[in-house]
Image 1 (spheres, chains in turn yellow, orange):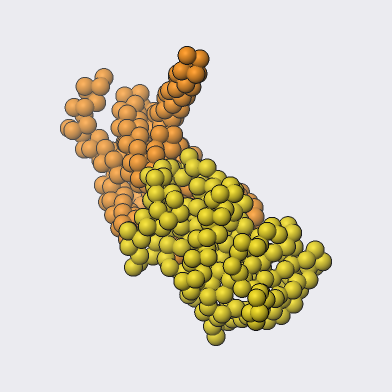
Image 2 (cartoon, chains in turn orange, green; image 1 turned 30 degrees about the horizontal axis):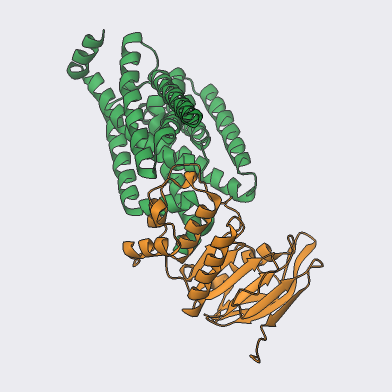
Length: 219
Length: 292
C-alpha cells in the first residue's frame, strides 16, 4: 500500500505542531520518525491513524483519501504509552490475543508469534502481572497478529532493556524484509543498527525534513 | 427460620418467582458489570437507573391522567427512558472526551430532577420506596418474562460478539485495527446496558443497581486470574448474594436490594481480607526463608 502525504499541517488551537509535511512511502519502506519529545511525532501518528483530523493537507492510502479509508485492519499499531489499555482487570496474554485476532488467523500463528518474541512461557499469565518490557512485547505481538501491511510503532522500546531492544529491532527488520511497511517513532539518535530506508526529522520549531537514506551509493 | 424459608420457597408462588428473577439477575448483573468495570463506567448504572426512574414516574403520571396501563406496567417506559439516558451519556461523552465523567453528572441530575417533577405531578405514586430500594419478593410473572427475554438477548449478543465486546472494552484505540466500528459498538452496548439496568430496577432499586453490577465483579477481580475466571467467580458471588439476600429480605422483611447488596459487600470484605492475610503469610514465609 502506498502512503502519500501532501502538505499536512496540524494545530492544537493556534499552536501549529506539524507544518507542511509531505512524504511518499511505498510498500516495504522503513521510515524512522525522529525528534525530541514534544516535536509532534505522536501527533503525526495520530493523523496517520485517522484520530486527528487532517486539515489542511491530504493523506492518501493507495488512492483512497484517509477520510474515506476503511481498511484499518491492514494496520498494526503499538502506542507509546499503555494509557489507552485498561490493564488492571484480569485477562491473560492468550485471552487478549484471542479477542484481538480477526477471522482467518489461526491459533498456532499466535503461538508462533509469542515464541518469536520470546514470551511463549507467559501466555497464561495475567496481563497485570507482567513487567513493562513483557507487556510491550505482548502489544507488539498483538499488532502483528492479523498480518498487517503497515506496522506503526510509537517509541516501542521505551521500557525494554538493551538486549531485548536489539532483538526487537532484528524482528522489525525481518518483518520489513518480508514486505511490511514499517514506521518507527523514536527520540533516540542511535539509528546505526536500524535498516531504515527513509527518515523524517521533526524539529523544535515544528519544521520537518524528509530524506531517503543514502548509503553506499544507493539512491 | 431457614427451614420455613426453604419450604415457602417451593410452596409459595411469589417465592418461586422471586427465586427465578433473582437467579437470572444474578447472571445478568455481573456479566454486564464486568464490561462496565473494564471500561471504567461504574457510575453509569446509577446514572441509567435515575433515568429509568424518570420513565417510571412518567408512567405513574400518565396513569393519574387515566392511562391505567402504565400503572400496571411502568417498566416499559422505564426501559425507553433508560435507553434515552444511555444515548444522552454517549452524546455528552463525545462532547467532553477528556472529562467523560461530566456526562454522567449531567444525565444523573437531569434524571433525578425529572423523576421528582413527575412523581410530584402524579396523584398515585405507587410505592416510591419500592423503586428506590427494590422488592424482588413482589415481582409479577410479566416481569419474569421480561428478565428472561433480556437474559436471552444479552447471552446471544455475548456469544456472537463477545470477542469484539471484550476487545473494545480493554482498548478502544486498537479496536479500530480489528475492523470494529467502535462508535456503533458503544451505542449498542449503551442500549443493552440501559435495558438491563431498567430490568434490575425492580429487584435492586435505583439506588442499588450499580452495586449489584459492580461489587461482585470487584470481589471477583481480587481472585480471578483471567477474564473468564473473573467473570465466573463474579457470577457465583452474585448468585450467592441473591440467594442469601432473598432469605434475609423474606425473614427480616427488609427491602431485597438492600439485603442483596449487604451480602455482596460482606463477600467483598471477606475476599479482600482473606487475600491480604494470605499475602502477608506468603511474605513472612519468604522473609523466614531468607533469614535461614
